[in-house]
Length: 301
Ligand SMILES: [Ca+2]
Ligand SMILES: [Ca+2]
Ligand SMILES: [Ca+2]
Ligand SMILES: [Ca+2]
Image (cartoon, rainbow, N blue to C red; front, side, top):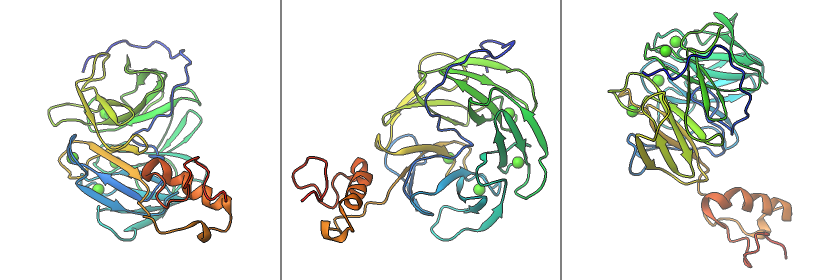
């Protein structure tokens, strides 16, 4: 892996776009997850889990090589360890309800566990259990977007902070300056972290623009090594290893298509109809045909 620059100090202060980070919550809405084991074609697995507004994390909770979802409600985590339908396999409590949490394999033993972020301090825990942190480190600034990945290929996940389109990579769970700095994409890009091919030694980035993804195979500046399209621009995208082959591929989160099942009379008031219309519009258009005159106001008469 080429190292672009060794940072003596991180002094650049640029606020980038929202980073969809490996490690953090995937964001978005909907209880349907459409996964693909390659970088082309249609979804090969469709999973429904949790509720549409749940906070969701995808990681390898049991160390079998397959990434699966966990839903967080307050400080309760509902872990699913396979990609089938059904209820949680495990429920555990962790941190405080308002904590920012990140998932990663901090100790390289194969399973992903949580770290709590408070400002620029990270309380790293190497087991899925309540109790004191195994390590507490400081990195970057409190407002930094942070990414989790195995940047050097030693099987342990560590942090990188993003400022605009600059990435400050740290290869150990320790306080200190960045081990490498590089630039990729634009400041407003959504960025995803993954291991894109067996032949690659470490994780690297892809940026998302609409439903087009620009994959870079190294932590260096330069043009994309692979460009592909997946899903719809309105989807929430995330990445993971769904078949356990060591390669991370695409998933998207999207609400379930409710079909044309409701009419204006089924809603308590116009506001409720409008909320339903607005929520589904980006994914399925006017699915319940609530906006007959096409002015984007539902059930106004
Ligand atoms: Ca797993
Ligand atoms: Ca671990
Ligand atoms: Ca590493
Ligand atoms: Ca895979």
